[in-house]
Image (cartoon, each protein chain N blue to C red):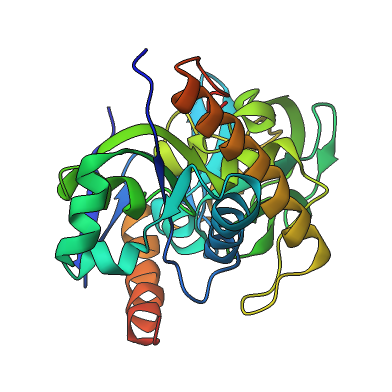
Length: 150
Length: 141
């Protein structure tokens, strides 16, 4: 089970799991038995709203870091998230087809997007943010959002 | 199942949100057009304000709640007002079954939103019929 860094702003509590790495846009990356599991942070899912559809690039797709990984349509927005690492998608979460709300319900576990094979994880992770670094960025983003009129 | 004379429809009050507008348009379709004699719309805002007449109506008849998002304010307020939720439905669940009907717009829905509201209204109507006749209606798949 993951431990979390968390902050409560206004009526919202945002959690950052401490057992993985992050991109600055809130895509998490976790090593899992030699492969890399990817998903969206709690802040991203709360900020984006209820997910209607999640269109993840299919298994077999090879992506370079920065290429489009998934398009997420929520009740508020339609956002494309880029892949934070280079590698090949070997599995897409089956829940994304019929129950994409898993992203909202359980962003750090059942709501994962894709499983990838990455050639050089040691090199890839040097380009990612550790949990504390992402937490600080996320707090800044969250504070900006809570200042906006709803 | 017990037969009922009237069903209360409580839609989302999400002003400024397309999904809230869809829920309200669907509620108007049901109460004004599809089943006018058997249904009554109770505005969520009146329940939030504690309006005694609205609370009494909700407490007296089975309700169908139409929520625009996972906060499920309509369902929560009906429960807090002493009402009985006969069935719940969420706009997002209906949209997931009709991906081509993406709702856009707030004061005025786009064509997709209008069609989605109609599909939702027809599902709610089926629920109303089930409650009135005592036969199960469409479940919120």
